[in-house]
Amino acid sequence: MTESQKSLEISLYLHIPFCDSKCGYCAFNSEVNKNHLKILYMTTLAKYISHKFKEILKNTQHKQLKITSVYIGGGTPSVIQPHLYESIFAEFMPLLKPQAEISIEANPDSLTLEWLSTLKSLGVNRLSLGVQSFESKKLAFLERNHNIESTYNAIEIALKVGLDNLNIDLIYGTPFCNRKLLEYELEVACSLPLSHISAYHLSLDEGSRLYHKYKKNPNGFFILNPSEEFEDFLSIGHFVSHYLKKAGFWQYEVSNYTKAKPSYHNLRYWEGKEYLGIGAGAVGYTEGTRTTMPKNIERFLSSFNEEKEILTPHNQLLEHLFLGFRSCVGVEAKRIPNIRNLGILLNENKVEREKERIYAKDYFLGDEIALFVS
Image (cartoon, rainbow, N blue to C red; front, side, top):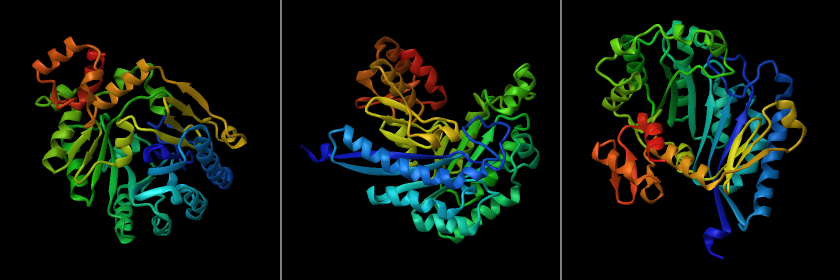
C-alpha cells in the first residue's frame, strides 16, 4: 500500500446554524431564538466529528486521516461562546496538516476581542467578516443588524489579536447599487488591510424574506437599469471585477478576489476534492457520494443520520465543468464532451488552453460555457 493510500486528505466544513437575527436576503440554514440549544449543539457537533472520522476510516482503505483545511461557517459562528469551540478543535487539531488554513465567519456586531483571541489561540488563522455594505441605507434594506462603525471595530480587533488573513463579504445588485455607491464601497474596502474580498450579486433565493416580498413582482425589485449605470461594462459584476483588479485583487473565482493567494479551502471545492460537511444542513462529498445532514437543529441533535446521494459519472462530469469554468481551476480538456463547441469557444477567444486544461477567459460566463460544451 502506497503512502497516498494509507492517508486520506480531506477538508472539513462545520456549520453553526445560530443567528441573533435573520437577514432579509438569507436563505441559508440558520435559526434565531434557539439559544437554549447552543451548548448541546456544540457538544453534539464534537461527538459527530469523532464519529464521522472513525466511520470514514472504517469504510475506506485508508489507515490515516489528514485534514487539509477547516471552514467554520453559518449562520453566525461569532454568536457562540468561545469556550464552546474547545471540544470541537480538540477533535480535528491532532489530524491537521501543518500550516493548514482554518477559517471562521463572524458578523461585525457580535465579534469581540475575547471571542477572537480565544479562537485564534485554538488555531484559527483566517477570518471572514459578513460586512455586505458600507452604506447604512443598503444595510437596512438587506436587514443587517450591524452598523458601519462595527465593521471598522471588528477589523481593528482582528489586527489587535494578530490575525491579518482577512476577508470581507460584499453584496452588490441591490436597488441602491448605482455606480457612485459601488465605487465608494469598493474604495473603502480596498483601503482596509484585507487579503481577500468576496463580492456576490444579490439574488432573490426562495426561503428568504426578500424573495417572499418580491416574488409576485420580481421586476419591481430592480429599480436600476444596469445598462445605463454601467453601460461601458458587460454587467455590474464586471465593473466590480475591473475595479478590484486595478486595486491589486486577482479574481480567481466568479465571486472571489485575493491580493496574495486564494483560500485553500475554497479551491478544494472548485477542484472537486473531497470534504466533510458536519452540522445541521451541512453538505459533504466523499468517494463520489454527496452527504446532507438534517437541516432541523433538533433532528440533527437526535441522531447521526445523513442523506446520501451517489453521483453518477455524468453528474460528476457536470460538476467538474461548472466548477472549473467559473474559477482558475479550469477543466481537463479530455473530459469535455462536445469537442466541436470547444473549438468554437477557442476560436472566439472565450476560453484558452494551457497544456491539458481549458480555462474560461470570463468567469461570469462559466455556467454558459459549461452548458455549451456538455
